[in-house]
Image (cartoon, rainbow, N blue to C red; front, side, top):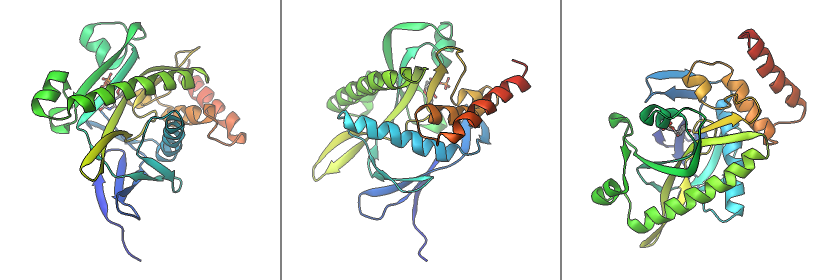
Length: 260
Ligand code: UDP
């Protein structure tokens, strides 16, 4: 047995060397962190669900012409992806006020924004991922103007697509975070979507009840996080039908336990 080489370990994923040059294996853990890793825990089964949810969304995005690093799912917790150079910017897209936007600007959570907002954060855990402007990106050379145009265009396309996808299953896409990478081809590189799209990096609210179906359940100690992730997967049609009832029942019983 040859032990495969670990390239990187993040908070929720591990990257291993892939079977061919230019590929990586992305392994999804159950570990969850919040508030810049000051709060740590696990959400049982999260890795399996995020692997499936992210696969589903990335495959769908590819069919509408958004290039992504996703190649194929390998097993329950792993997918094969293209190796890219990650652009050190977290791209946040917002449709509804929540989280840091509400806190920073005093806008009530749940307020529909009159237009979609794109924000950029510098990916640096030691600095706590500070918010940055285009000026900083240009000044420090984190991405070129052409790359930023591609990133902003793709972020809007991803948002339009995902708003529709989630609306179709009764979920409001409040906000989400994207990461992009450079795919090299000789002397040239192009920007493609990387990382993952899952309830870890999205705010997803049930359209009728406003119930949170994402990592805010963990951040805010609401409980029922595993059931919430299952519910998203179930509505996307990614869980076998016979688990449909159990996921709903779990969430219901959880609500009852909390007296709501
Ligand atoms: N987000 C993320 N990783 C981060 C910061 C934010 O995935 O390091 C996601 C988060 O889940 C939410 C969106 O980006 O869907 C906007 O997050 P916000 O800026 O409101 O920060 P938060 O309130 O999560 O600290």
